[in-house]
Length: 257
Ligand SMILES: Nc1ncnc2c1ncn2[C@@H]1O[C@H](COP(=O)(O)OP(=O)(O)O)[C@@H](O)[C@H]1O
Ligand SMILES: [Mg+2]
Image 1 (cartoon, rainbow, N blue to C red):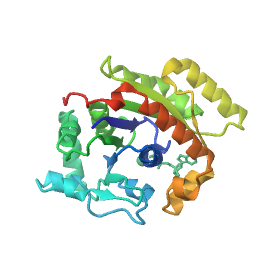
Image 2 (cartoon, rainbow, N blue to C red):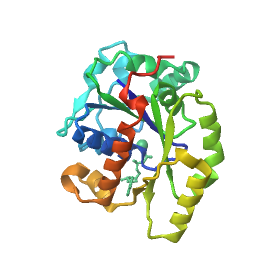
Image 3 (cartoon, helix red, strand yellow):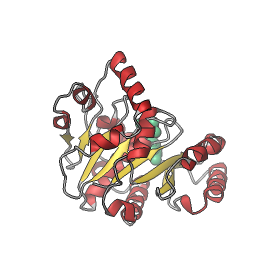
Image 4 (spheres, rainbow, N blue to C red):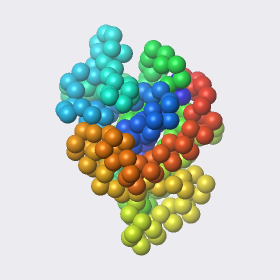
């Protein structure tokens, strides 16, 4: 099962939205998908049609040595997903400590997920430098870094580059700019600077700022069902097609650390 991790060192740049909508786009393209939430925020389910965050998730039973793969859910679009679930403060602190000492924790446990034929695993995590995000970096076959065309992304670019420099030399990654308002000259300028700084790593297809993304989240409906003509959906379908062409996402998973 090839694994795609969406990561960023910025909060709120759209990782979880993109995991949910890219999952829809891959399903539309005939791919089996498993979206895995590795974020105590426990909101991925809301982006996939649940009306409230689920109590039960996969992490709590896993820590208790119970049957955690049974926490998997499937939405009306046939997207299989593992919500993080609710985790108490003490358990969360213990997990964070364990993760900091064992870089391959997530990768190993993902290897135990029952085979979903050729399913593509999409990983959602909090921003770097969280231990959760570092785990998804280690578990990923391909990393999609999410930025925005603004001063915050540019200011944080050196810190991001420091993270990217820690990746294995053969680790493929690309940078996606989300929530671009191309009617604003300042955003077009920031996009140009990011593209210049990141070179071929920066995807030529940004995802535009589109109210349809926020509406579909607010109404618990899929972008495909509710806003099939939206600009963001058009962009996301293009990004999914590009990702499908990446060798790392077509083949076998990386060796588990
Ligand atoms: N392309 C977009 N256009 C408009 N709003 C977006 C877009 N992408 C994300 N959003 C909105 O931005 C907010 C933060 O997105 P979210 O996915 O929760 O970010 P993160 O997971 O990075 O913290 C949400 O309200 C979401 O609906
Ligand atoms: Mg998120």
